[in-house]
Length: 625
Image (cartoon, rainbow, N blue to C red):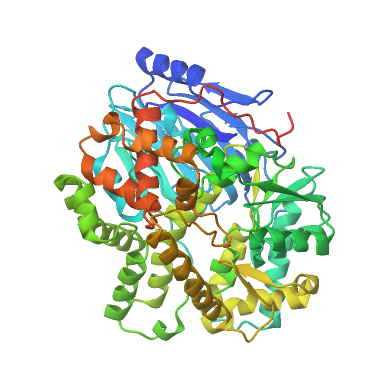
């Protein structure tokens, strides 16, 4: 478990605040057996830092009138050869000029209390990898990396705008949460709370210059930065686990970690017949790394879905929840987990559009809006109006414009090409990819993600888009420094693609073939009203197929979505919900909608109403005590 929980009042904590904190810390804080939880109590601050595992940064440091609570892993100097401990982080913070914000690296949340200035400062890392929630209670501020520590069951209301955003895009791109009054601190933002009130400010970033050629020198520098990032972790644990898919990012990281001397054990997750699993097994064999295959059993979804909502606190989308269930049911390998997350976004050109590099401001803004529109999950409007109440429908309809404006304001949109890249990052990665992927591992283990090293990211941000596009830079990195990983194809979206340059249309052509096969299967399913339910054989399982295939899955989903309790929320129309479930049963692709309603309903029950909580909390067996 990685996280912290604190309560702060500049003028000094009152008795009620201390009692509230103590009760929640005793009854709601997730602490695994044998897990340390450091505590601090001063006149103005009471807090806990929880950290399990091998990395040294978790804990609390105090120096005179300053206190630092730290969770995660942090380095205070880009050239540092090792991770910093809390005392070193506090010393580095003290040495800054007045008003200067630390520029630390790593995967962390830091809370710095300065009693002399009567101010609390909370920082996330560049990418917001550790979740941070906050809530103001009069002159007191509660901050936590677990939302359950901030809710007041029986008194809190549901944030209907957040429900609307969930139903529009499947996740929350804005800083609100499903609990009215509880907010989320966006990545790379600074929270300051003192006698003058609460301020949330974005921190400056170098941007995306895109002015450096992707030549061998740049690739060699990238390789050096990845190795430097891995070297900080290499000595902190005798062994590491790594999540392998069939893709390029995870195998590149696996090969790089081997060069750094890390002892690895891999795991992969998927249904029988998953092309990703097959390619992950081939990759592990090629690199001589032992691998555990964690099979997904969709028939048992009712046994783990609700538990996963509880432990991931709604950060993981309803069509990604199987990773968590399969991983903890199948025992993760021990040790900190290496994660190849987002290599394609910073070194593979995933967000680039070279035809827009010299485009007008209006064209850049239009491209942002088109990109946002791709994330909308509820179509067509007729279904929305039949399933949602008029008030929720109006709010869902308003989501695109409101969210686009919010993100544009946060990034200081001025119509430049780099604004498009930043918009895509904030909308998709900061709000969805990082919370969703790390929500599956951060509650349980240390995470090592070198592609999210800010120095690695900043180098990638300088490189010319034409040299990144279609994974060219990644492939060149592999060919120059880890040629073994090019010996077998990679998988993207279920499509097998050779690892070599000069194949810009391979994915698009493969997708067309898959879509043709999928359309035939969809037609058979619809014509047979769900009785013919052929597997797609893609990278990801299809939850709608689980619903059609297995009665226990239908009973579980229907028992929640079609319950009187759900229908009486005032968000949904009963007949529309029944129609959605009927359509899902007979072959329509409406799981994103049904699954999101299921997730929202379970979240409300578990966190806001304090019911339907798991009676047998999961202890991740892959973690060494």
